[in-house]
Image (cartoon, rainbow, N blue to C red; front, side):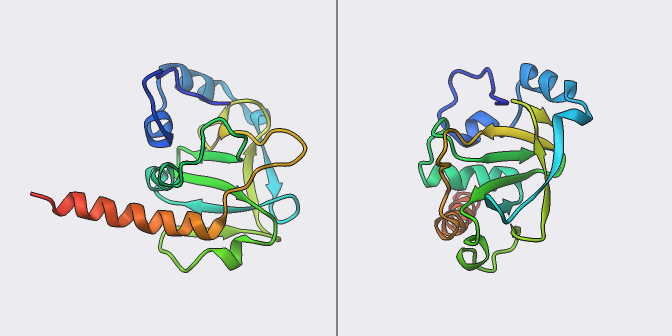
Length: 158
């Protein structure tokens, strides 16, 4: 898992917004074998949130634990967060929110094939065990909107 060496990090934003030097080295070392194009819609759907920090803030708002085995990935080049959700749920659970898109049956996404991945597909949290844990897509969408409102309120504060 492409984790930051930052031991003071308290959440998703603090941990993964900016890769530290060690994480940068590991992601840069990943070659073409560190990723594979993977079909969505069978074992999981995905919700993609842009920009990355917006999606990380939504995970923080939902109190999703960093190490609880949810499928969470980053595309640092495109500044997008990819969150696995239960198959068949993404389209119904995600409202029409700017910067949020659904990957389901018929969609393909670049996924890491090793613990770290690359700049285009970095593992932030890998699913564990036989029963993967999924973020609820409707709750994720609501958290994205809440994070937008909070960011807007901070921008308007004197």
